[in-house]
Image 1 (spheres, rainbow over the protein chains, first blue to last red):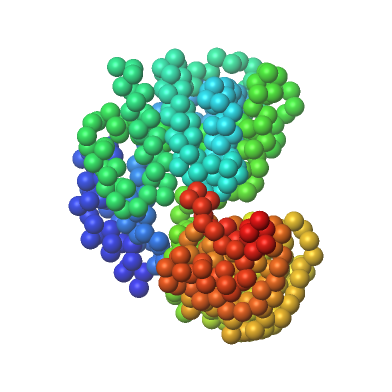
Image 2: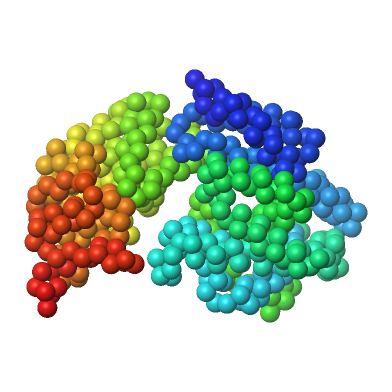
Length: 188
Length: 317
């Protein structure tokens, strides 16, 4: 019963979804990823989904994002393995190390400064959206502006933060250079 | 060139925002944009990863539960990010599911003026009025959460597994029921047409029988219980609004939700009571002209703020 849902729609729209996966950077793996998408769609129980095809696209998009982040995690773990003997090379650590905490705070401070440079309003709207998890529709009346203005503020913030991220990564191609000694006492 | 990169990133950010609630055609257009230029993929990825990074920085920056006090985090850093960390901790407590697309919960949404019926696999039916957002769980057809708007529930009762509706921090539990719920920023109104509903079972456990309504305002005021006519519950499904001593502010709210137009009401008549039936439909001009006669008010239209309902005397200055 549940097979006649999302999975069936995925099969029907296979060419479009594969085309999307290819364009999204899957390259020759697009077919494999479609299989994975289809299998995930199978496990989604039937039920009302507002726009099933849009939902499948979103699943495919998330799949690509997950894939890329998993690859990055692997690289980082190897780095860490080389740099910190006896670090959490097993990779199964949920608790961030002291280093990670410092790095995260450092990054957030940069994010904060970047947002501040965009103006108070943009910064406030971005925080409401990304940190407080308030939907755009609800942010609009809060600030007395239209939905499309909210979207513009958010676009501006995301674009600026993506630029920031690019420049941070350019400064330190290896995100995790553990030059902070003596803080390892917190690490598990 | 650096300039180009910046422009492309801005476009990518626009796509990223648009796709949050993107329709099928948005995704097809997005595919075409990606195909235009290989730099587009990396720019989009940069934006998506910025978003994901924020999530992990926020969760990393929150101090671990067993952290010793002597970790030397520079004070200045602490000061700057204090707000973020507090927010992150709160966000984690609420759960990221509410902010990020999650696999287990999904939203069904209607635009203002749009009606939509949902059939759950156990036979339970949910009718959504316009401008409504309802969350459902995959694999669990005994749960729904009303995020906003109005919905009528026709619940198939299972004694061992009651249907629960979450409305913010409040819960309704059915005992074999047809009921209607409205959630606005000002509060919650529940009307029961058939069966019984338990409001916040386990806490106040208010029992609402058929023919009763419960109104709770979000400013923390006392709950009000009143009588209603059962046949009027969720009359919006038949394109009519039925009232028995309802304040005009509620009438305006309902009309706005049903017709997808902003309707505001002058404060001096917001609490005036109305009893009667308002038939929706026809063109808007005619509808509001009829409404003015019916409510004995002055109704005017402004280009930017929609329809305004005011007292006849104040409008005729």
